[in-house]
Image (tube, rainbow, N blue to C red):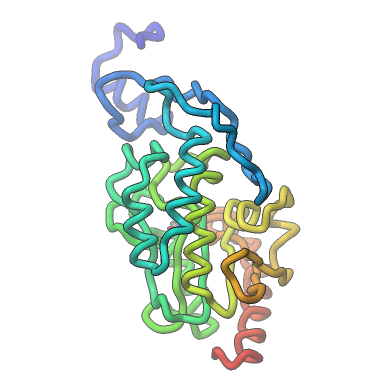
Length: 270
Ligand code: URA
């Protein structure tokens, strides 16, 4: 790609790319990532069947309907959290895996009665292999600590997406759709008493709604899925990264945390 930048020295060109957010070395040969052969429904109906003819051609990029079938089968077959982790590790349907350093699966106590689900790993999580360890994770830890929760004892944390989107871009609808079977199964296997969805991506994807987090936050809802004996109460909250950018919203986030704390006390969790 020249874009009229032939006269720029390589360092300036690199700086230009970094400024534009292209901060990952992806590979030697270009890949047309805009070429998706089929649309993947973000919210497929449970009864949705996959047409037998929907086989991708040999050179089809990842993110196809076949990958979605694969994701659903792999996730459903996992009977333990460890099995789910290795199924996810072996899943070839997400191209994010090729650009990320490692999978970021979960952190905290898998026996905890509270589970929080965020969006996707960022650069720090990608480096360390644990969710929420960067700046927003540090804020999250302080928010949780303020109401008596900590990943060392009584909360379990994961994300909808398990590999870092390059340059911290937002995950695409197809990436979310391909990751959903895994996080839904993850929730079933942990079977927490209370769920927290941090941010709009997690809330929209897992609550199967188009409503934004500003409307959803602070209102208790129910998370249902086939593998659960009963619905799990879920509280959507603002994502800590959003609170770092919009500190004036911390007031609302604090109200939500107090609401959460009251419910956890009622349930004898705190
Ligand atoms: N943001 C998230 O949603 N998850 C992480 O793990 C880190 C940042």
